[in-house]
Image 1: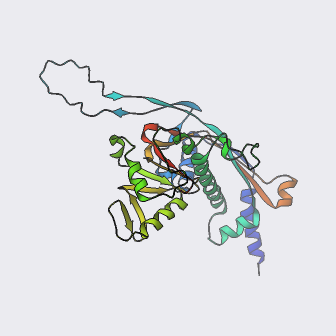
Image 2 (image 1 turned 180 degrees about the vertical axis):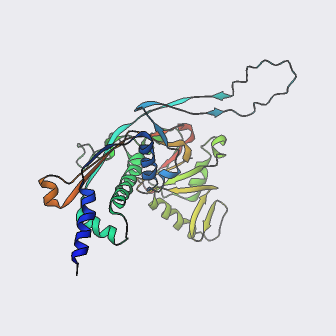
Image 3 (image 1 turned 30 degrees about the vertical axis):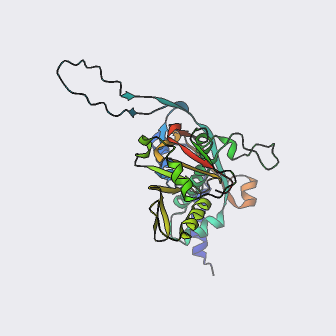
Length: 314
């Protein structure tokens, strides 16, 4: 039975998140908040995230050519050999928001069961969901995406063009059409990339869970083990010598081989958080309303570093 002391404690705790908040975070705190948010996702923490103070601009890339060493005779001019280039790629963030009504009872019981501070846990809950949605959008976003009726813009996916759509503009493609994938398809696909990318330490296969499980099944059905895949404790760790990054919520019929550093989430240090428990709607819902505004873009630095596969059976 709930005691009077417990009821008072509950009301005191709930009162802390009933205070209306309208905060535009300072730039340092905004970046830290986004860092903590992306850590809630599975793949975003592994990417080369950039933070900027302006909504549009360019990202610098440093490309160093090989075989630039020359014999020194003392008669050289300090002109270099033209081996260092600084090409740039454009970014332009879109303003996005996440909002939700959080029921007072849900917040209270969720926090008291763990003995945690109610306000801290509420922010953690918001960051967790926002991080998952950010990863989904940054990979799967497509400004041309439509709902099932074929005419209405998808309110989530149409916000921005994500990594997958941009990677599909690479000319390095293997189309499996309606054929079942084989391990040999993946081994042969590797050869589409230039050797300089094959030697990058973070080169990885990017795929969804369904494709991964299909490949595990293919490997397990083999009569003998071959050196083109690596199974560790029943888990598929590598294909053709390259690790696998299983991206949560990644769209189907798509696999890419690319360095993870080639996929760059871009955020501005412009973050706003609002919370209210005022008004008739909040009262009847017995809830607090939370809304978070951010600015994001998904940038692929080098298309020549992307080799992708498509197919209805992937």
